[in-house]
Image (cartoon, rainbow, N blue to C red; front, side, top):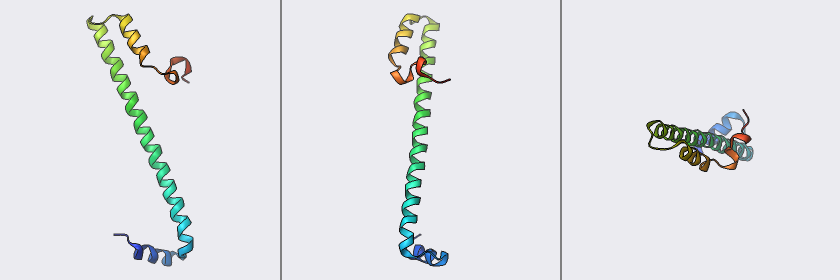
Amino acid sequence: MFGLESTLSLASFTGISGGDMIPLVAITGGLLVGVIAIVAGTINSISSRKQREESRREIAAYVAEGSMTPEDAERILKAGISEDESPTRRCT
């Protein structure tokens, strides 16, 4: 759909020469990669937090039905927290 001819005709239409087009394409490509990386990181973070919350709810349900002691649940929940996620390090 967009070939070299259409790119060159767009460049001649806008008054941009071929040599000036390379930095423009490089900057635009870099920005596009950055935006994609940010979006992918956000989706990954949301997904992991959702899974963590679902696990907490399941453990709470096990405690509520009596198939797990609260001490076991606390031990399991603490085992899954890394140093960066500990409650003392969170900014709320």
